[in-house]
Length: 302
Image (cartoon, rainbow, N blue to C red; front, side):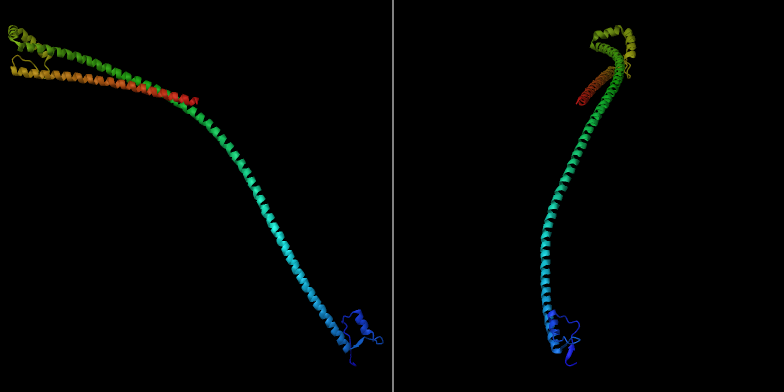
């Protein structure tokens, strides 16, 4: 090809280069340059491409640095905005907590007020019902006390009547017994006087001898009728020893009668004391009931 070659169709040349390339080829039908020119042009292209690549690399590095700086700036800005946002969120959270606290305090005050009102209402109702219960209780106590007092009076009257009837009966029996005892004792005393007169002296013995038949009959009748107690019968035919023994037994019988009389007297005294104690107990119960009724009335007034 005479040392000449075609220019590649994709060669990128400036207007000046194109003009320089074709300035010497105006008379040719196609564009042909020498290999040396081509190599020179290609070298210039390569240098240009290298410079452009270097410029592009530097531009890319600058762009990377710029983008890196931009990212760093954005990051710093984001962090700064983040700090501001965190502070604002903390502040907002504190405000929210304060508002929540105020809301809770307000609800709590309302609840306390409502609870206080409810408590006061219950206390008033309780006082009212308690007073009603106290009045009803005092009324029942009063009725119970009145009923108890009436029953107690009836029971005391009944017991008093029983005691009086019993005392009257015993007193009547005692009077009859005392009357019999008095008669018996009087007869014994008369008989003892007669015995003493018998033992006293000869004058009585002479009178006994003179009136032996009459006295014997009278004495037998009297002693058989009065002194025939537990085999104590004065027999004129008995010896002096037997008479003294009979007299001793007679004294023992008299002592027994006296002891029996004292025993009856003591029993009567004990019954009277028992009656007095029952009367005293009745009075004490009556005073206790009156005091209880008085306290119930005072509580009802309060």
